[in-house]
Length: 625
Image (tube, rainbow, N blue to C red; front, side, top):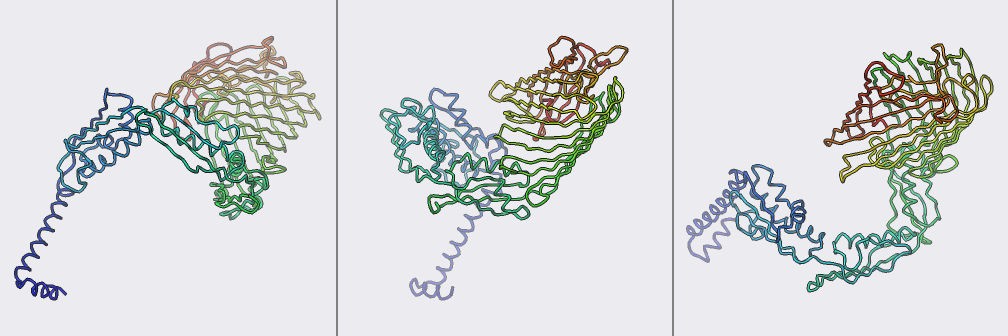
């Protein structure tokens, strides 16, 4: 083929050797160009070892310079060494669009942007041409006038639509506000059942003479839709019928994004799925219905957990848990718990606890879980010994993402030894609880509050009197500064036992103060009610107050100062009439592991009866409260 081509050329040119020489020259020139590119981009060190980047705006607007610097790729290259020239050119060319986008977000719609590399405009530089080292990049930006909103119209709007606060004539016309206004209009229609609402025609006009932005956004609500069928994909061991029951998506009801979120939360809360996503159908079904598909990935059926906590006085405590997430194919959970505490401690002997709990989600209602639990506990405390068997069944009701209630019926049998001698009692219980959790992070809260109230009426079968045991735990958190590095945390606890007097009360129903959960710095259960003759027992009332100041010093480390105080009284409700107070204070360190902080607290007694050791040390996972 080459000979034919040459012959053809020969017939035209009449000189075969000249054509061959010219062909060779072309090949040599191409090879030389390729060699120069390779040497320029790879073989030779064409990186700028110390790239200097400067951003300037008229009147040196520091805030705007910072915004543009954050958007610039050139600024990110400035800290690097041995940068390839091609990378510098590519970053500079990309910066035109990135800086323009940042200016639009700040409502500058008529900017002039110049980016030079060693004095040459970056837009005119070929990204493959060898330039040698680039030492200096200059970004000059004249943002032009700041634009404000002029005439605005978003229609039609759903009832009670709330557009962004700044989306009004005369306000700075940031492009994000335009997007937010359109999204708010669509979301409001979706919230009232128009799941396929979208933005239709929109006209955005920049009036450069007046530095005004006029916007007309037309919405298309689409039809009012109702939930159709829930389709399930991806499940293997959990039955499809049970997944539908747990999700509780109300077929036939008017569509609501909130209802969809609640169904997703129920599937997640069951613990049986590592992924549970509800996806709306692309097309509207017959009768203006909308099917939803649950895309499921099941979690491993078995789970194991181990924990430990150490106190210099209370000793070592260890716990373990084993759980099966799908016992009968309906996302039922069976859990075994074991705990040993007081190992090597000075506050009594070793305590043991063994528990088993069965839970069935979506029983009677999609937000109600049935539970049945058993507990065996042996306590060897300084003030009493107790061996207890308890059986309880009931319902946990998840009223919302933040509110949880529990109603149960139980039986309790216990043998105790305390200052009043050896006794046995048997009671029927009616445990009730309410929990309000509005913390931003349960393991490391910086804002919000938490309230848990427990009350348990009990009926005597033998060995005691009818009564009511209650406890209230309240916590609040507040953080200062944009990064929330300074946090104030407070906690209040109130306990009460009404009915039996001290001599008749179940020994493990009485309250004590001192230790990691009440007053740090005081030894565990060091404060009770003094009976005389060196005898002491727990109180029928308890009051605890704690405060912490947490200062985050680095991304991982925090310092904590705290003060705790506690009261124990013989009266049924803590009124301060007959009891005693104790207090403790100390310092702590927290190391954030990403899943929760590791806690080290060192505390000393401040006032009242308690520890004489001088200080106590507490180590655990998570904040103290």
